[in-house]
Amino acid sequence: MADSVSSRTAKQHVGVVVPVRNGERYLDETLTAVEAQTHAHWRGVIVVNASTDRTLDIAREHAQADGRWQVVEAAEPGVSRARNLGRNVLCDGGIPSAFWWLDADDVPDADLLEQLLAELKKQPQASAVHAVVHFQDADGKAVETTPALQTRLDRHVADCGELRRLSSSEPTTRLAIATWPCVITPGVVLARATAVLRTGDWNTDLSIGEDSEYWFRLMACGPMAFLDRPLLAYRLHEDSAGVSAKRRSGRRKAVRALVAATKDQAEQRDVVRAYQLSQWHLAAQRAREATSLLRKGRLRDGAKRLAGAAANATLSKAPVT
Image (cartoon, helix red, strand yellow):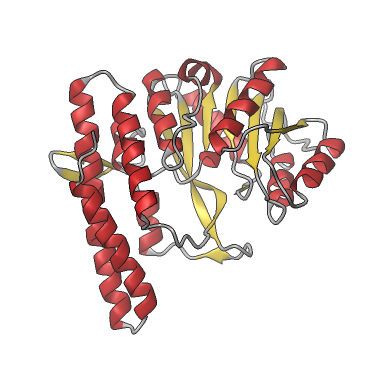
């Protein structure tokens, strides 16, 4: 257990939720990274979902070695259900001051909690705070942040029909979340418990964009502060289903959920316009990437980028509501 706890944050108890299904390859490293946090005052729930590998054994081994962990087996599938279950279990033992939702293949830096807690203390109006990530491959090797990856990290907001990049001093707003998926993983977010309890459950009807929809509702309690520091290693996995019809439908369903999360008609219109604008910009970006790849003779990669560009172009014109 870590001994060096910041005097500014030592009395703050953080609730950690780690949902996992068949995660034996990465889970040990992720849990070890949580145990090594310089802010040591946390309690965690590992929610194991119908795993057929050694995931449950690994989780139990960590719980036996470190009493801050509790292992729960989920009766129903789904990451949102697991997050809801983990939150409820943590609250049964005393409501934490903040919640940290960590994916089972993320590797947080040792001072992530300490840094995010300190930022929350400085931003009393914020419902949460998020940082950025650095990238690694499936084997844990560092991946250079290319222009394409940097685009995923940049925060944008729709402004007069254009995308405006937010400065590092600006918070992440509801419209920014609707415009651009800039929060790469829930693992870089620390949310105040007061905001979490007011927001309610993660949306179990969404298979794509459930995190953005949750942050959108959470920020009814206040903006999300931004800490411009990479504090977590995010694994890049191959996603061959990225342009499927099912995923396009899932994205439209997710933005409809954003629209449904507000009763303000002006904000609803802004959300739809922001989403369509961002899809158009993504289409243009992927078309440029495809052209570059094809010129280099990388035909397969170029074709995948073209398919992605076509999918984004379709989403930019498809009706949302």
